[in-house]
Length: 226
Image (cartoon, rainbow, N blue to C red; front, top):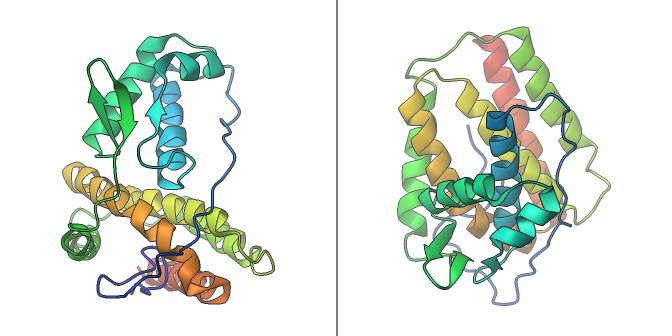
Protein backbone atom coordinates (compact mmCIF):
# COMPACT_ATOMS: atom_id res chain seq x y z
CA UNK A 1 0.00 0.00 0.00
CA UNK A 2 2.90 2.39 0.61
CA UNK A 3 4.51 4.46 -2.11
CA UNK A 4 8.28 4.52 -1.68
CA UNK A 5 8.37 8.24 -2.45
CA UNK A 6 6.08 8.93 0.47
CA UNK A 7 6.43 8.56 4.22
CA UNK A 8 9.93 7.05 3.88
CA UNK A 9 10.58 8.63 0.47
CA UNK A 10 13.76 6.68 -0.23
CA UNK A 11 14.48 3.04 -0.89
CA UNK A 12 17.65 1.72 0.80
CA UNK A 13 19.48 1.01 -2.46
CA UNK A 14 19.12 4.49 -3.99
CA UNK A 15 22.18 6.72 -4.40
CA UNK A 16 21.85 10.21 -2.96
CA UNK A 17 23.84 13.30 -3.88
CA UNK A 18 26.16 14.76 -1.25
CA UNK A 19 24.60 18.15 -2.00
CA UNK A 20 21.17 17.15 -0.71
CA UNK A 21 19.46 20.19 0.76
CA UNK A 22 18.24 20.14 4.35
CA UNK A 23 15.11 22.17 4.98
CA UNK A 24 14.49 23.37 8.52
CA UNK A 25 11.47 24.71 10.35
CA UNK A 26 11.45 27.55 12.83
CA UNK A 27 11.40 26.58 16.49
CA UNK A 28 7.89 26.91 17.81
CA UNK A 29 6.08 25.42 20.78
CA UNK A 30 2.38 24.79 20.25
CA UNK A 31 -0.25 26.76 22.15
CA UNK A 32 -0.67 25.53 25.71
CA UNK A 33 -4.10 24.74 27.13
CA UNK A 34 -4.87 26.30 30.51
CA UNK A 35 -6.10 22.90 31.71
CA UNK A 36 -3.06 20.97 30.48
CA UNK A 37 -2.09 18.06 32.72
CA UNK A 38 1.46 17.05 33.54
CA UNK A 39 1.19 14.06 31.20
CA UNK A 40 -0.14 16.24 28.38
CA UNK A 41 2.65 18.75 28.92
CA UNK A 42 5.25 15.98 28.77
CA UNK A 43 3.80 14.62 25.53
CA UNK A 44 3.59 18.08 23.96
CA UNK A 45 7.20 18.95 24.77
CA UNK A 46 8.41 15.51 23.71
CA UNK A 47 6.64 15.76 20.34
CA UNK A 48 7.97 19.27 19.75
CA UNK A 49 11.60 18.40 20.50
CA UNK A 50 11.30 15.13 18.59
CA UNK A 51 10.06 17.03 15.53
CA UNK A 52 12.81 19.62 15.85
CA UNK A 53 15.36 16.80 15.77
CA UNK A 54 13.69 14.88 12.94
CA UNK A 55 13.24 18.00 10.80
CA UNK A 56 16.87 18.96 11.44
CA UNK A 57 16.13 22.18 13.29
CA UNK A 58 18.50 20.51 15.74
CA UNK A 59 21.02 18.78 13.44
CA UNK A 60 23.28 15.92 14.58
CA UNK A 61 25.83 17.08 17.14
CA UNK A 62 23.64 19.83 18.59
CA UNK A 63 23.95 20.11 22.36
CA UNK A 64 20.50 20.65 23.87
CA UNK A 65 20.45 22.93 26.88
CA UNK A 66 18.19 21.77 29.66
CA UNK A 67 18.24 25.23 31.21
CA UNK A 68 17.59 27.11 27.96
CA UNK A 69 14.63 24.91 27.06
CA UNK A 70 13.20 25.19 30.57
CA UNK A 71 13.43 28.99 30.27
CA UNK A 72 11.87 28.97 26.79
CA UNK A 73 8.93 26.90 28.01
CA UNK A 74 8.57 28.61 31.36
CA UNK A 75 8.85 25.36 33.32
CA UNK A 76 11.32 23.67 35.64
CA UNK A 77 14.14 21.47 34.39
CA UNK A 78 12.58 18.25 35.67
CA UNK A 79 10.08 17.70 32.81
CA UNK A 80 12.78 18.63 30.28
CA UNK A 81 15.05 16.02 31.83
CA UNK A 82 12.30 13.39 31.54
CA UNK A 83 11.77 14.27 27.88
CA UNK A 84 15.52 13.95 27.25
CA UNK A 85 15.45 10.42 28.66
CA UNK A 86 12.61 9.45 26.33
CA UNK A 87 14.44 10.96 23.36
CA UNK A 88 17.48 8.92 24.37
CA UNK A 89 15.37 5.76 24.41
CA UNK A 90 14.21 6.65 20.89
CA UNK A 91 17.84 6.89 19.78
CA UNK A 92 17.57 10.59 18.93
CA UNK A 93 19.91 11.93 21.62
CA UNK A 94 22.65 10.65 23.87
CA UNK A 95 23.12 11.92 27.43
CA UNK A 96 26.74 12.26 28.52
CA UNK A 97 27.76 13.25 32.02
CA UNK A 98 29.77 16.45 32.01
CA UNK A 99 28.91 17.15 28.37
CA UNK A 100 25.13 17.32 28.12
CA UNK A 101 22.41 16.00 25.86
CA UNK A 102 23.62 15.65 22.28
CA UNK A 103 21.58 14.96 19.15
CA UNK A 104 22.83 11.67 17.72
CA UNK A 105 24.35 11.18 14.28
CA UNK A 106 22.27 9.81 11.43
CA UNK A 107 23.21 6.15 11.08
CA UNK A 108 23.13 5.18 7.41
CA UNK A 109 24.69 1.78 8.12
CA UNK A 110 21.57 0.41 9.80
CA UNK A 111 19.11 2.24 7.54
CA UNK A 112 18.23 -0.70 5.30
CA UNK A 113 17.73 -3.06 8.22
CA UNK A 114 15.44 -0.62 10.01
CA UNK A 115 13.65 0.22 6.75
CA UNK A 116 12.87 -3.45 6.07
CA UNK A 117 11.75 -4.04 9.66
CA UNK A 118 9.55 -0.99 9.63
CA UNK A 119 7.75 -2.17 6.47
CA UNK A 120 7.04 -5.54 8.08
CA UNK A 121 5.79 -3.90 11.27
CA UNK A 122 3.47 -1.69 9.21
CA UNK A 123 1.89 -4.84 7.78
CA UNK A 124 1.41 -6.31 11.24
CA UNK A 125 -0.36 -3.20 12.50
CA UNK A 126 -3.35 -4.06 10.34
CA UNK A 127 -3.44 -7.63 11.61
CA UNK A 128 -2.80 -7.44 15.36
CA UNK A 129 -5.63 -6.09 17.54
CA UNK A 130 -7.07 -3.67 14.96
CA UNK A 131 -9.50 -1.13 16.40
CA UNK A 132 -12.89 -0.20 14.99
CA UNK A 133 -12.71 2.47 12.28
CA UNK A 134 -14.94 5.18 13.72
CA UNK A 135 -16.04 8.45 12.03
CA UNK A 136 -13.43 10.21 14.17
CA UNK A 137 -10.62 8.27 12.49
CA UNK A 138 -12.07 9.05 9.06
CA UNK A 139 -12.12 12.73 9.99
CA UNK A 140 -8.47 12.55 11.02
CA UNK A 141 -7.36 10.97 7.74
CA UNK A 142 -9.49 13.50 5.83
CA UNK A 143 -7.67 16.32 7.60
CA UNK A 144 -4.31 14.86 6.56
CA UNK A 145 -5.50 14.47 2.96
CA UNK A 146 -6.71 18.09 2.90
CA UNK A 147 -3.48 19.37 4.44
CA UNK A 148 -1.51 17.56 1.77
CA UNK A 149 -3.70 18.76 -1.09
CA UNK A 150 -3.34 22.34 0.14
CA UNK A 151 0.44 22.03 -0.26
CA UNK A 152 0.21 21.39 -4.01
CA UNK A 153 1.24 24.93 -4.92
CA UNK A 154 3.65 25.42 -2.00
CA UNK A 155 6.68 24.12 -3.84
CA UNK A 156 9.48 23.19 -1.48
CA UNK A 157 7.35 22.90 1.68
CA UNK A 158 9.12 19.68 2.62
CA UNK A 159 8.97 20.51 6.32
CA UNK A 160 5.17 20.58 6.24
CA UNK A 161 5.12 17.34 4.25
CA UNK A 162 7.30 15.74 6.91
CA UNK A 163 5.00 16.88 9.72
CA UNK A 164 2.06 15.32 7.87
CA UNK A 165 4.02 12.07 7.65
CA UNK A 166 4.62 12.22 11.40
CA UNK A 167 0.91 12.78 12.05
CA UNK A 168 0.07 9.88 9.76
CA UNK A 169 2.39 7.65 11.76
CA UNK A 170 0.51 8.62 14.92
CA UNK A 171 -2.84 7.87 13.29
CA UNK A 172 -1.65 4.44 12.14
CA UNK A 173 -0.47 3.71 15.68
CA UNK A 174 -3.90 4.65 16.99
CA UNK A 175 -5.49 2.09 14.67
CA UNK A 176 -4.06 -0.88 16.56
CA UNK A 177 -4.81 -1.89 20.11
CA UNK A 178 -1.47 -3.67 20.46
CA UNK A 179 0.53 -1.33 22.71
CA UNK A 180 3.93 -3.08 22.39
CA UNK A 181 3.62 -3.03 18.59
CA UNK A 182 2.80 0.68 18.66
CA UNK A 183 5.88 1.38 20.78
CA UNK A 184 8.22 -0.62 18.55
CA UNK A 185 6.76 0.91 15.38
CA UNK A 186 7.20 4.44 16.73
CA UNK A 187 10.78 3.64 17.70
CA UNK A 188 11.61 2.34 14.21
CA UNK A 189 9.82 5.20 12.46
CA UNK A 190 11.70 7.99 14.19
CA UNK A 191 15.03 6.18 13.89
CA UNK A 192 14.63 6.48 10.10
CA UNK A 193 12.62 9.71 9.84
CA UNK A 194 15.67 11.98 9.88
CA UNK A 195 17.27 10.06 7.03
CA UNK A 196 14.05 10.26 5.03
CA UNK A 197 13.72 13.99 5.66
CA UNK A 198 17.36 14.70 4.81
CA UNK A 199 16.98 13.08 1.40
CA UNK A 200 13.39 14.12 0.63
CA UNK A 201 14.23 17.21 -1.49
CA UNK A 202 16.34 15.00 -3.75
CA UNK A 203 13.14 13.56 -5.23
CA UNK A 204 11.73 16.92 -6.25
CA UNK A 205 8.59 18.56 -4.94
CA UNK A 206 6.06 17.13 -7.39
CA UNK A 207 7.15 13.53 -6.85
CA UNK A 208 7.36 13.85 -3.07
CA UNK A 209 3.98 15.60 -2.81
CA UNK A 210 2.23 13.19 -5.17
CA UNK A 211 3.67 10.19 -3.33
CA UNK A 212 2.47 11.44 0.06
CA UNK A 213 -1.00 12.26 -1.28
CA UNK A 214 -1.29 8.88 -3.00
CA UNK A 215 -0.40 7.06 0.21
CA UNK A 216 -2.95 9.01 2.23
CA UNK A 217 -5.71 8.40 -0.30
CA UNK A 218 -4.92 4.67 -0.38
CA UNK A 219 -5.02 4.47 3.41
CA UNK A 220 -8.33 6.35 3.50
CA UNK A 221 -9.82 3.96 0.93
CA UNK A 222 -8.67 0.99 3.00
CA UNK A 223 -10.19 2.51 6.14
CA UNK A 224 -13.52 3.05 4.37
CA UNK A 225 -13.54 -0.59 3.23
CA UNK A 226 -12.82 -1.88 6.72
